[in-house]
Length: 350
Image (tube, rainbow, N blue to C red):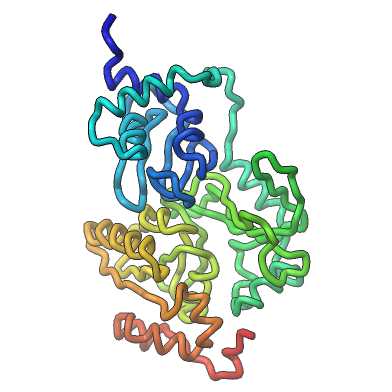
């Protein structure tokens, strides 16, 4: 009897994609139709996505994975080979056969899986929220130097928002909600930031910020009046900090370096500023987005903070010195037309 081919093994592994992920990538977690983790070696993070559902064959088949930070991709045989640092394919095939001989949960058929629309769940949760003004979310934003964002339509507040972690009881805590939208403005997902009851910081949780729905290519958008310039960045606080400096320019927060690299860029864009974090993931995200934007003939500028991110800059430097750090990184016309300088009294972020 002949041994199964690598293709046969990959298909059988894909039938148990979530079990494969839990075994080889235990630091990740299920997020909708994907298993997310930091990289193929299983470090904590969210730049690598493994499809847990889908057809048997094709680029969107279950078991297919891609790392938005590095561009690596493949099937579950490839994932096991890299994860286990095998030098020979023979080792990988032996490993896969051994895994498939283990007791594994029966894969659910598509008919037995409950239909789940995380996009609609995100929209319903956002509708349940209330205006941020006079809530702990307003206190949180003010404490980060971002009181200008309190009335922005992309943000809402929910007094009791469920926080679930595997094998832990559900907790209900106050949360700031941020609507993730596509370029047409349709809500596709949601970011939840759980807060301390008084709003003076995030809640004391292992994961005080989590997302729901379709984030890939989309982001949290903050308004501006200039139609052909955009500032894109990672986290909410980072992007809102730069928005405070240049409120006339629209801004979008992709919510992670991986999603920043994959951001869908609007048509008619002439100039793009990428406000990245000062780390290796931020550098990689900028490089990938710069390449994609360049292919669309969009002029790209890199914005680099003095500290770890731009909210650190705002808190530690104050408005005026942060503006002075930004000015040389902008196109000269934009620095003159859009960059706001405030006096020290109005720049207080204490």
